[in-house]
Image (cartoon, rainbow, N blue to C red; front, top):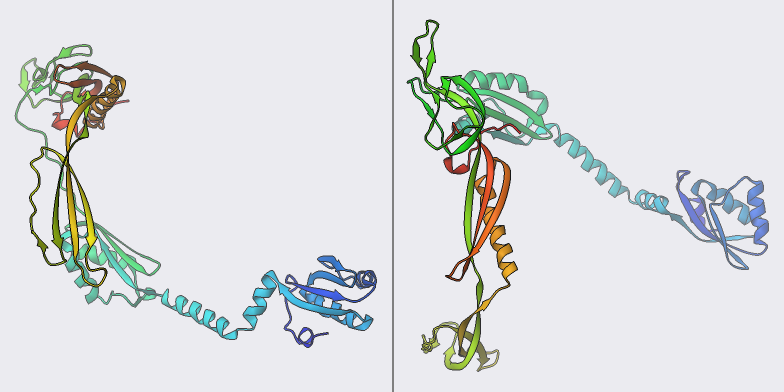
Length: 399
């Protein structure tokens, strides 16, 4: 039996070893192991004198002793799977020590802050950075020396213009979040005034906050028409002027139009051509600007021929200009129509982005100028009290 089997390091029971048993009457060997209550994980006969086996590493020493006592021989003994990797690891104490040292250094490094990040400070960025450095809060400070709540309170006292601070430590990063105060929106006009419609539409709902509504659901209004009058009745029946305010939701319509050519231009060579040659180097060329033919449109084909092999960078450049003519070729009508409708709808949806579209449809017409015109129409819900602003800032509308 090999000496390394007896002198091997103790292995956990869950690891496995493989070996080849050599000898005669191998069935007797299996029966002996069964009597000794030793279980093989795998046993396969390779020939009449050898048996390929897999056992638990903890049973290997007993199996080797039984084999030596009964006259069998173990060969090709080797650990399997995790056992092999564990055995290789145990034979490299330097690797284990390096891994333990790495984990120890990583654990020690995690006890410090290595990055200080300030977010949303704006004009206070540089001053807050200097203040933190003055307080000793910089990369390399221990986490146990940081009091995030106290630091946030100090920052709030130092910068009263900032609405609030949030300070926290995540892994090795100290983050200081600043939220600056947001100025209040301007108050509505205090001067008495009427509220007029910003666009055409059919009124759906009316909400009056100040003033008197002069339209009701179902009314069709035009752009510029008064929809909420800037006056209210007092307790005694007198009329009081106010700044009209309210919300009038209406069904509105808009459209976009595009044009797409019904023919595409294709080029075809006419057969006329012209050739120029010049001597080229990396520094200059002769002639520097060869004359090009007086063609309306042409294709250019360049050919470079080395003159001195790979030793000198000199080559002859041949430029061939071939005249081409552009011929309009009709495109399939359905393809042009689909392309135009898709483009018109795309522009329309971009124009009404953020609005609730209630319906859309397209119209196409072929013009005498060689273009197909497509118009996309859409109905949408909008607040008549808000300006159009290029259809980019829609009001919050009910679904």
